[in-house]
Image (cartoon, rainbow, N blue to C red; front, side, top):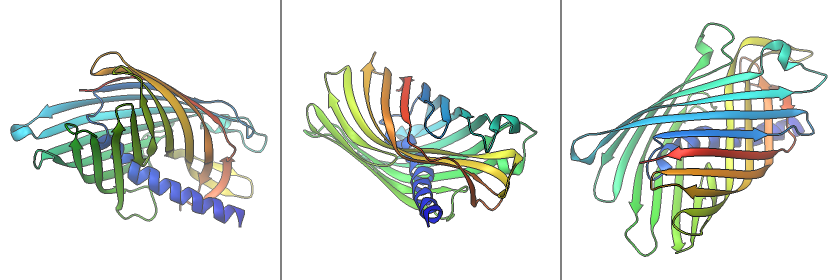
Length: 298
């Protein structure tokens, strides 16, 4: 019953992560032109330590009638260190995972308030220990609408749409919703996924933000891992829910630095077989969380 309950929680989180995380490309007022970020989760009681380097680059191309085409890429390098006696990841070449997204987005100006958005994202997620194979590739697609009302007393931002991810079961498009409102000169609330939270605007250059975040990854294992009494593991996935608080400093209108710290409310790192059934739990203990980065927008 405990394993079944965990699988249900993992499925719910993965649905949110896989389908709603794509909306993050549309959530920001403008996409990142460049982002460099480092995340660290120190070793917990399960003996697991995780770090991530994220690099993002997007090139917006202005078309006629205020339409836009955005071409970009995102690279994530995850370093996973697990110290357990029942499995040794270092001997299986599973310490480093690579996730590369190639983004192609089209933004259509419907009227003065609404923008219609379509995003295609081929993805490579692999250990890259061997030549590329079919399991390394997946496909994400998102369509939606974006409404931005900033020239009113209480500015709002709304994103709605549907998103599809080929690595998640069930393989059907699911809806997403994001809403942000600055209800006070100093305060803004955000409701949605993968992020919900509150912002306190100290001034035009500084803000403090609390967040509830859904995060995770799915990576193909090019060298299947043999597990005692469990069979062969052909992929690894992780889902987590985190509560964080952080600080952002705007260096200019387009550049900012930020740092966050927090703790997981739930996480589950598992190995899966070729049918994507969970066969071995690597890490389901809570962890501390730290993240810092530099961003350039438009």
